[in-house]
Amino acid sequence: MRALVIHCHPDPASFTAAVRDRVLARLRDRGAEVRLHDLHASGFDPVLGLQDWRRYNDSPANRLPVAREAADLAWCDTLIFVYPTWWYGVPAMLKGWLDRVLLPDLAFLMPRAEGETIRPGLHHITRLGVFTTCGASWWLTMLMGAPGKRTLLRGVRYLCAPRCRTAYAAHYLMDSSTPDSRARHLDRVDRVMKRLVGQSLEPKRQEPAR
Picture (cartoon, rainbow, N blue to C red):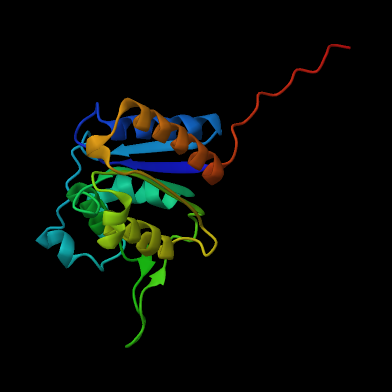
């Protein structure tokens, strides 16, 4: 298993970071190869500028400004997002990652003829996980259409393997959360991760000497 984890939060001491750490621990317990992209810590530039836009359809030159990110996206079979939901959607930094990294001839294939739509390009990704926190309640988030969840679990999911397994866990009412609610949510993250990637690898039992 090759897992790419995209973490987006400006505060390294945030609860989102605790969720990220729980996700990483479960992946490593499972024996996965893991690559972490911490967008704020790495200073990722989320802006799709004029030069990037002009070469957007020029593959493979369009990957050059985000070569590491593109290579890791092509490498992974498991893609996981960990972020806070702001204004019911993904943060600007993460939206910029989607804009700049999910490129033609990498994440999707452009239409070949008039009237056609894009075609998926991430068929090597068979697991997609989304872990977030929401200041609003569940019902208010649903009333607003949960655009962040839909962007990732519908939009990005469409680009992945046809039978891509998905997982989602959100801590709602984060602004009025308690130590107990946060601890319960971390336990839920454990359970959701086990469903996504399987149980931890058990150490091999030593055969008795003969």
